[in-house]
Length: 472
Image 1 (tube, helix red, strand yellow):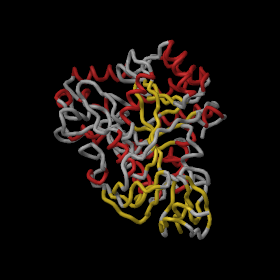
Image 2 (cartoon, one colour):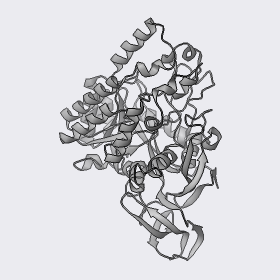
Image 3 (tube, rainbow, N blue to C red):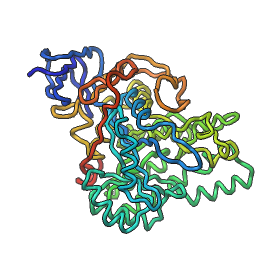
Image 4 (spheres, rainbow, N blue to C red):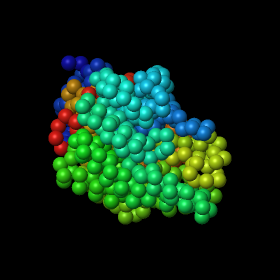
């Protein structure tokens, strides 16, 4: 067989194995894994490099409406461009249902936003904010059959959060259809109470975002979400876990026999609440929910990755410009932390941070890195084995990593739409020097290559978590 491309002499890494092999690519898929493949139109020398599956970031917010004139910094063009720069080949973004809107209406809008603008492959999670009988009884089951097999519910944010009875009804629909539910776990009533108390005390600075969203509010909501899932007997994903107490709720639920996936993010490994406590408004750059915690919580999240509590390491990329009246420094946000849009950019830095701080510092092995950044995402969200692995028949979505390449993070390097990165100046060891999507190079040496917008929309199968007992 003559290959379109051969990647030669690299070290192939999957979630379970590490071995030296050439990779033969034909018609966008991996066609051979063997020594000394030679017959190819293109040969890529990967000597000294790791050959990894392209990253899959399953928690990405792009071009979402935020209200009050706030504009998200990344659309599908800039957001997926930044994802590719950071070694990713697939992102799962959120399709936000607005009150009174059908899910199909929402999907029509988001598909239009993404069409012809994506540099990596894209799929959508459905955010359920208005779970009417029509939505849950008719529309959602049909959409699951069409390949929209995951959804998200919020326990916080007025206008987004669902009551417990609405969550139960949504979980029951997921149980019947085989959809997988992601849950944002924070107690909204507690947060609103604390915000009111802070305002009475004249506490308006960005640092008070963290004190109004304490660990207890996340722990309680995590316990409640897991209890509701247990009542319905349905798997759930607990997203962006920030601390040990919420992590222990996941451990306890698994001991009860529940099917649970856990997710954490770079901000909970690298940032703390102290980052919000800066002069002027600089702390607004680090406002996200749940907020960064403390050193003990960072250590706990590393432990969760090392011990398998967390199946997923995602970015929760939710970018807003800082020095912008439509971003972090909007007029209301300057006066009161409650109006600072919640979210930070991170789709490009997710993989390099975990590689540098995790693999290169010996906290996790490289197979775990592949599992929590790619393979488990593909399995949990219905894309495996087409995505998330280096195997014959899989899409040739591949990232070549130089473990010795040293990079200092700067905002310009990341090619996103935000005017800052929370990780400015961070020293990284290990970087993706070439990224292939469907066998074609889309990034080389930090720059996009070739024609724009090669990404495709991906309908998905059901999750491994909804089709088998136990967690991934």
